[in-house]
Amino acid sequence: MNAKAGKELTITLPEAVADDISSAVASGDYSSPEVVVEAALEMWSERRRSQFLDRLRTAYEEGVASGPGRKVDPHEFLASLKAKRQRDA
Image (tube, rainbow, N blue to C red; front, side, top):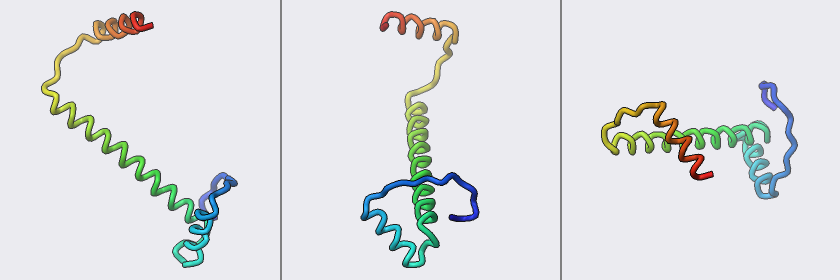
């Protein structure tokens, strides 16, 4: 394991995935199986962050495209939400 302190976790992987990890280490691309898994998880985490930002960007663009905002009284708005929830219950 690398110099970072961490929690040990034992997992069972499909044989093909375990073989890929072993090949990555044997090729010299990675120093250990732990480093392969850490790199894969970092890429997965980055992809999730990127997808979140894409959704956020799309929501923002949709909001801008929907036209100008309007003033809303927060107390009236909250009351309308509570009334709707009671009707739907």
